[in-house]
Image (tube, rainbow, N blue to C red; front, side, top):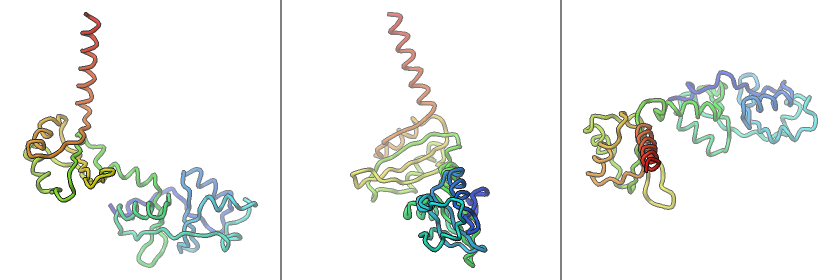
Length: 222
């Protein structure tokens, strides 16, 4: 997933001819804390809402205050990956990242909302299946072995990502797997010595709810 495919079709850039109030309205409407400043196709940097709000005359044009406003350059190339976009946002604590082409021309911007919206595709969260989380030392991680265990149960891995275990040298391996019944795959991982930390399954949740309901009915009939 490349940056050029994530560009928001709606998020406007800040032009020096725009009034301060117009830009504040844009930030509020699109729920962002910054806007990219662009002049004749050239990206100048990100403008913060905090600095805009300090201007006493909101009817003034941005251009009349541009020299006194600090701009932060936060951009990616059109062919950079989704992960690079997330890294730029995280590293610079920004809600917007500008996208530039080979000549440095501004092509558009990506907001946090765009990142979250596309994250559903990257994690296959819209696909039917269940989530299984393994915990293991980093040196024990083997994608080949994990995939083999899943596929031996006639299932497929839809998505996989790694995350650290707090206050530990271990890591979580988060798997989205096809199918609705996790039990056989859980047993397979346990048989191979893996620690299954969590399982999230709508079928299992429904079964648990039914079991609790049946237990309540039995109690009420006593």
